[in-house]
Length: 171
Image 1 (spheres, rainbow, N blue to C red):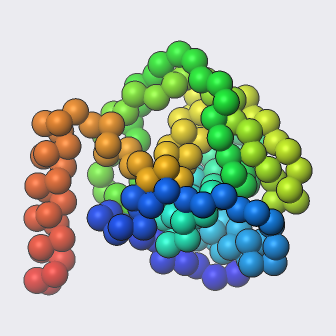
Image 2 (image 1 turned 180 degrees about the horizontal axis):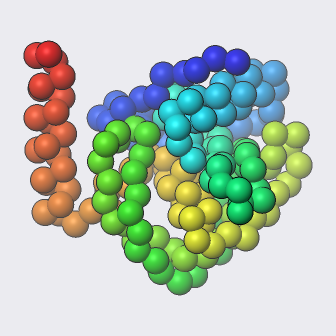
Image 3 (image 1 turned 180 degrees about the vertical axis):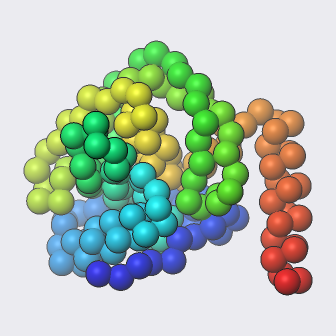
């Protein structure tokens, strides 16, 4: 297993729409293992293949909490098939480090996809798991959580981010 580089905003791969995975072959299995290693090392609770420079429809989620009995969730070609309710909560992203903001999401979702063995999976989720699944599936569509900010907050974020990039380049 290897730790992969996490692409950071404004890397163009983060805006690419991910392509469906036709088969879970040895290359995809290695990508899953490497993504898991990368996510745990970061540490994060979710990772989409776009975030490691591979625009493929693959996400991993692990809430990493004792009270959570899911453990590592691997979803190939996931899609949200039902969504209900609304919740607002603070989100962050490994591709937008050190920035957090409140985001409105669905409170409950039903997600379908395939597991790493190409078996059909359906997950009914609410709370943090529902938010994490929506966040990671957004990555597959080329959307980031900052896209949900109101125009004023988004403008403030972009100005701060440009300043941060400029400071990093001169350091």
